[in-house]
Image (cartoon, rainbow, N blue to C red; front, side, top):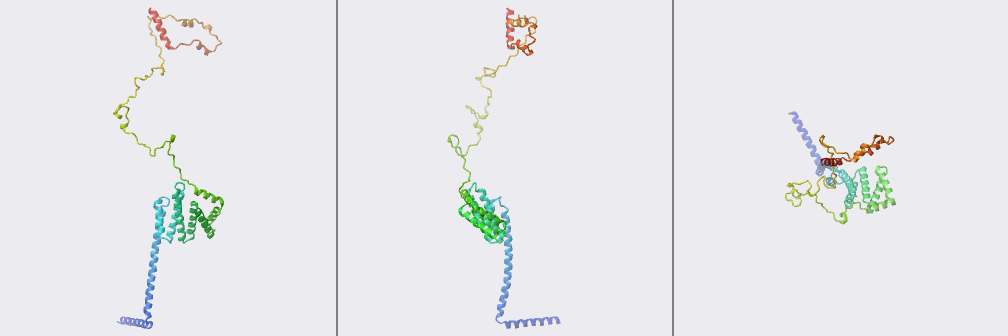
Length: 341
């Protein structure tokens, strides 16, 4: 009971203090209350905006990493993805880096196509310069700004027009002046000195007028005949493989032997005739022996002493040459005919 009574007394004292304060403030009490409420609402709004900004930053970096992972492999998908990130997060770090990556990729495409598709290459280089300029404007750190300015100079040089060379010179001058000790500042100073020389200017004038696209292959062959644009490479059908006067096609037999009108192997003067082997006379005692011919007598009557000892041994066979074996059967037949008579 005493504690409850004490609590009621304290509550009454607080009410009295508040009532006295409200009476003293009078009409200003509502203003003070409104200001307090506004402060609370402002704090809540700031906290909510910071939370949303963190979410946006996280989302932008995630999309940037996803798009940049395709760099150099799938240009048809990566280039639109980087453009979307740059447009969605324009003025933010993620958007600035997306524009920088987009400039690098378009610069690479321009170099790859310059010697084969010059018009497409120039369009890619112009887009590259624009992307680098957007990255420079949105850059919040010096490193990003230096890279963007260096990209502007490089892409402008490859375009090789009078206006683009002037843009490159102005960009290199600005870069080397603002950051003379940085690597990009030193490189820009070297390029600036080179671009101001007369020889480099003449080279870029010549370079811009050249068309490095490969020439078309000739469309005429020998004797100025037109070559077929699409040659027929199809194989003939099975029915087309027929002989003249044949209707059976591949089913008809083909005689690979020569016809009767052509000389057979071994006939005619064109083919060499094989030597006929010497026929051996049968060993029959009743068969009469033919008298020796004059040549044989001459060989038999020659004494062995007539051979000169001083002659070389290899000349002896030349003195007694043997006749071809083809003549022996004729001599034997002649001797047999004389014996029968």
